[in-house]
Length: 260
Image (tube, rainbow, N blue to C red):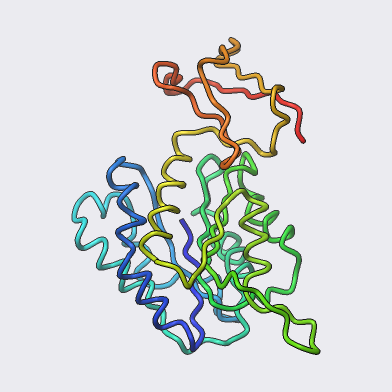
């Protein structure tokens, strides 16, 4: 999980809210005993994409050893300050992070990028180019999810044509089948929803594209699974096996379908 935190002058309250409500996000990971690592970076141009000190403490091992200290360490790490530029570049920060630390990005694990900002993303390139960069080291494009916590009440500044809000971040989330949430809403509810969504993904098999319904065929070690063995989840664009049909560790899963 890569947290991309807006460190501009208007973000003190939002950083405090994230720190105070983080347990809502982390509970799903801790309760399910999932293996995870979290990192934190900032949106400030020129400084974005570098790991914030303290990120190395945010691991599943640390959470298991001392849950209280883990939550405290997260709170300390995400309070990145408010001295950064108002020219926020969250998507650039995410791209720079994965390219600067390629050893952190394993090809067969989920990468969840959570962007927290109250302004429009000023990254200069297209959303698709940033998603391509995030997916470059992944075996499956579906393993990359963007979660945008931003000001969803986007507007256009009169006479300028400039959009403010979260147009780019929202598109990145939508195009990666992630989640868009309003930064003005309850942080506890928002983080709980995102944490549950991501934790549930780890029990599923992501598809790289949305399939035409009725065309999905699933094979486990070369044997076609019956339709009662799995379900397709439209929201996460993934296959999830039902209880009693979960393949053994080490099985090869192949999903054949016609994309939309």
